[in-house]
Length: 295
Image 1 (cartoon, rainbow, N blue to C red):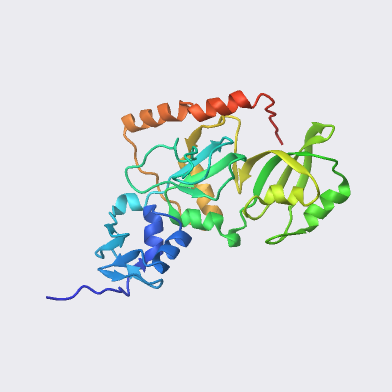
Image 2 (image 1 turned 180 degrees about the vertical axis):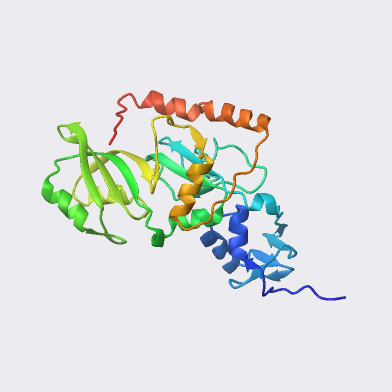
């Protein structure tokens, strides 16, 4: 009997395959490999490991089911996150998560492209393609983020110039690539700001470094993807083929055709997309002073 090789030399990198299946981003999976959570053909996986369709892959002792047709699928979801939701799958405090409202997948799982903190609303992207998620979040592809932010305090041109030139935060230098005034009166004013990174609470911390207080924050754009008025708070929609192709092109990925959906599945998705969540209703009721800002 011939032994199955434990470390294939052909095929694709393990983290790339598992990312494409939708188990997580490549970075996440690399950390799982380092932690010894993954085996290939009964042997602990290593970071240089390559696999093909015949190899047996286990994550935490559970076999990874690979369906080549669905493995190649690339779906992208746009979600208008309300305040009060956290960007984790399971929250130990029982708070609502951004995954609660998304449609369930028969294969793989939704991977969030970056995060927003619990008090920040607006645009979040999800995809079934871990490689797309990895590239969209990687600094080398320069995906800028745009936010509408309402700050309390006196803002002058010198402060704006400092925020664009750069200030030192606890975790290193940071700056906005653009700051544009967009309305408001008195000490509460709206601005649109852009930055190239996705560090924790970076927009808030930049303003706070100047003695300002942020009392509303909403992401309105991620790279080429805008949050349009057609998507109310707490709702989602799937990107169309041409939108996904354009997004893929931004990060040098070849287009992949969307999987065909049955008519019944399409109708079910449309019903789910229109259904408001209980958390959305609570958020709207609380936010009587909601201010819509357009650029």
